[in-house]
Amino acid sequence: MMQNNYKINFQIQITRAVVLCDICLKMVESCSAVNCCNRRRKDVKMKFERIPTDPNMRKLWLHAIRRENFTPSTTTVICKKHFTSGDYEVSVHGNKALKKVAVPSVFDFPAHLEKEPIAIEGF
Image (cartoon, rainbow, N blue to C red; front, side, top):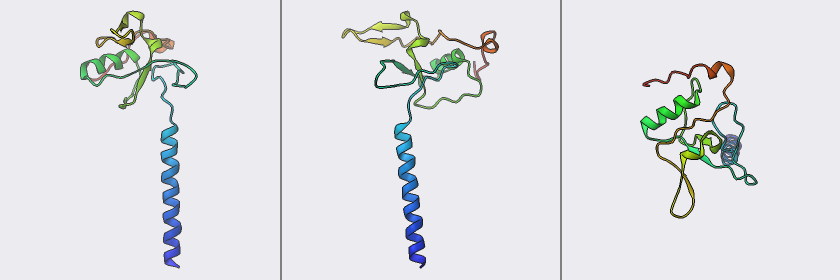
């Protein structure tokens, strides 16, 4: 009897793990800017930029997006809607690439965020 309980419990745990992995694989990248609903979809060509790993550029981006108590992950992205055309350069192959010094600057902030940017630690 004990062996059957163990077997059932093990099967439940495996099922949970598979379901969780399936959910993770289906998670959709979405823009982290306030009031932006853009998501990565197959039918819409929308470019997304990852938040920089360089500490100084990262602080500039976090200051620019004005999200209080926000901790970005390695997969956090901002869509192209928040950059100007001058933030991109054309490569030799004709592809547009975000300049290394570009900071998102085009936002639709609610009134309470429009007045003052959120203070970012170390800024």
